[in-house]
Length: 155
Image (cartoon, rainbow, N blue to C red; front, side, top):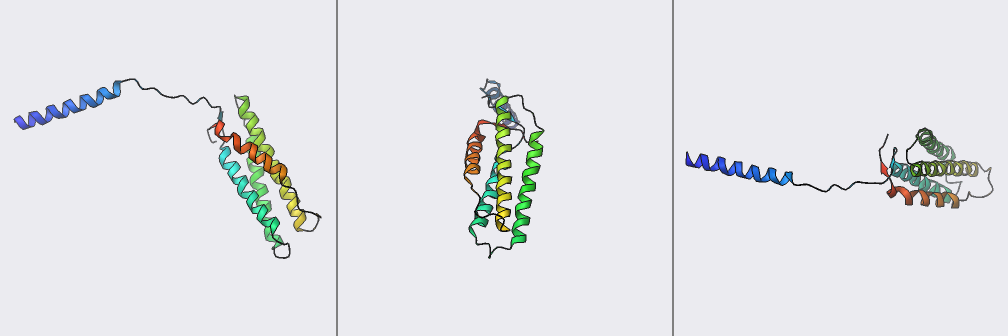
């Protein structure tokens, strides 16, 4: 009986001590970054994947490339970009910097689609030179650098 009483009192004492720890005030940090309602990191990452595929494709001689397969792949990338752009265009944010960032992501997607069009033309022999990637690279860098400034609430 003494052992039972001792073990119950030890258990009760331990529980009271543990619950007292929870009663102390804690400091919760508040994240004051603006909220964007889409996951820009995944969109930019997908854009980077597209870019790598296009760079690879543009470095392979066209006589080695299966042109119809490459064009289907590029058109699939354009469709992905169009879906992202359509979803983003409809989003409105309370914070103007989130809207500005959204516009930058949309601008990047549009630049990537223009680059895809130029790449398709080059594959079919319609273009005399390879398309320039400079503006798309700088847009990608600008958008990617701003990602940590925002919190995400994916749709």
